[in-house]
Image (cartoon, rainbow, N blue to C red; front, side):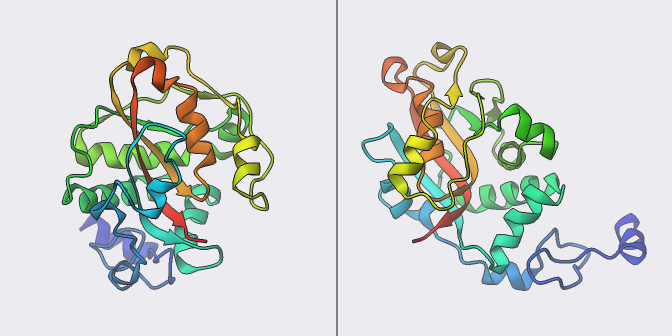
Length: 229
């Protein structure tokens, strides 16, 4: 009844198409949810094209994104509103939705800890929250896996990576992350969470800060979007 009243006073709209949402819909309408360009990577999380980005660069177990991402599309509006329109709850709701679908394929089996890719202090201060942490919180609510937000810190924010190739992106994020106590994660299977995977450079740099070979840490990766070039 409260939701009905609120929807009458301030109708909610789908972030993808702008259509008015029904009472039981959150942020995206059922039509857009049905048309979401899902990758289905969770059905083959070991050898899909996203997982291949990390081969030989970090001890990767599984990797999957919920949908294909491309700028200036309806799906990109999900990420844009989450990051730039002060709507952190989008991350929680989308994280929950992705987790429900991935759980059906046992994607989370054996994972001990969730670590969201951290933001630099100045960027978090500007935004007011870390969008990756919001996604991680949603995943945690569905899976009951603990989220750690202090296992890795980001020292500074690099220049935009939009126009860089993959190797330039890897160089751009080197030495950006620091882990105060990586030994505390020894032998753990860690799920790294971010909003979008393009080259995988940021995720690789974050994983490297934990010195995984020294501490026998294994990683899986989950993002909402995957940029398919």
